Length: 402
Image (cartoon, rainbow, N blue to C red; front, side):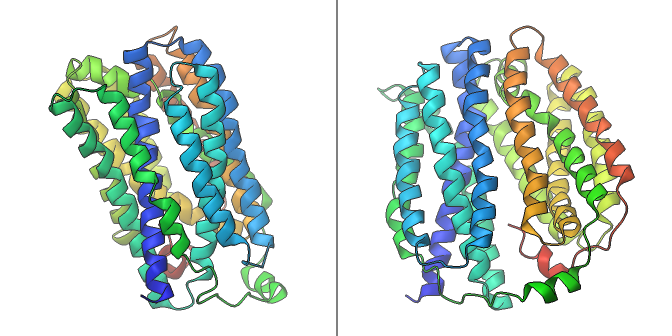
């Protein structure tokens, strides 16, 4: 097997693992904390601040790798990061009842995950010398995301459908561990030098892409920060929906989660194909209005309308994800510093809103938290309106969005 095909395997499996663990941590772990363990949500909120703040390491790693031209040590970094992810994951799932210990190890997990994510992304960019390889890389990345989205849902359904003489929750979390173990060996296949793209002349690149509009960068950062206000109900949402709409029935709830994943995936596909070349600002504006209004309605609907409106919400979110990425790349002129500055505000939203939402869920109803998130999303229209339009990016850049 040649180096290019080996890299396809690595890219696919890494993004499979990335999405599998994301679903486990952000969809099922909140249910375990809130319903099974019934933890002190205020204590959990403090732990979340300490752990999620480590996500800022991704910004630092990205800037480092952008400036670091040599790839000679990256294969070692990728392997060590894989080992670190495996070790920290197994340590935090065995310490879920000890919140402080859990917070320490999941924080370490986020650091290794960020390092591995940046290392793989950098390798993908450097190993896309032709349109064919670039397209194939994108396909394998997207396949990994899609399979990784559905895998934990089906595993959860199987475990909780059949009576297994073992703690079903611990068995489910261990499946995440079994999924991540092969990464330690698969990453050894990666070739960080094959097909390395020629580094562009910085002076020519700067002249070609033009000057940065700093006001637009700040406004886009504020827009992203406010639209990620939905992180407020990141933890309370699934436990609330499970009890309110599905009466604690894991089978029906799992089917609902499957529908959500399908709609987000469909939205990303539609956003990157059907709406390719459309005015990004207009799409973001209309989509943000739809999402904001839906947040004000969804908490007070019956089961049928809840599923329908959440499906529309997730589909729209998928479309907006693609076009917000396009607009960020466009406004940052492909300069990593400004690109990462905008995404630093996304991380800031995560660090602030997830713990805040967890804390608020201990003192107010989840319905109100969802409404507050909707108001924040609608407020994000103000900085979006003030952004001065710049030309849409090329379809070549769009095709690289995973």
